[in-house]
Each structure stands twice: as C-alpha cells, then as structure tokens.
Length: 59
Image (cartoon, rainbow, N blue to C red; front, side, top):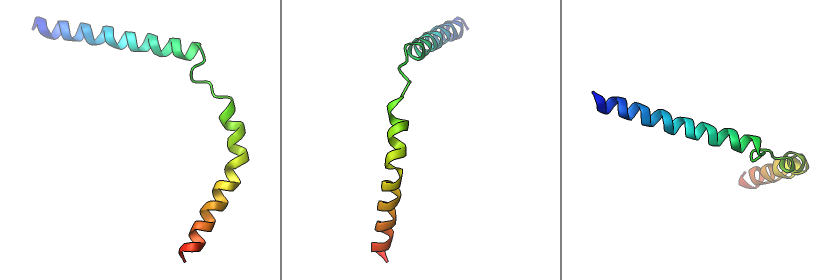
C-alpha cells in the first residue's frame, strides 16, 4: 500500500512541474504568434484557388 502512496506523490509532483513549466512558457510569450494571422489572410485566396484548379483538372 505504501507503493501506491509513493506513486501518487511522485505523479502529483511531476504534474505540478509540468504545470509550472507551462505557466512560465505562457508568461514569456512562447505561444504568442503575431505574424501568422496577418500573413494567413493574404494567402487564403491562393489556397482556395489552387484547390479549385486541382478539382477542375480531375474532372
């Protein structure tokens, strides 16, 4: 039974470690992406048009 308590304790410590790492990554701005949304709106039409050309060539 003591092994279960040990495993639960270790898993909680590991989970807290991952949570702290995630919070630190979010605070430093690692997940901020300012460039992609502005570029995506420029290339949406090209992606749609190339998909339409592929569909026409298959017919």
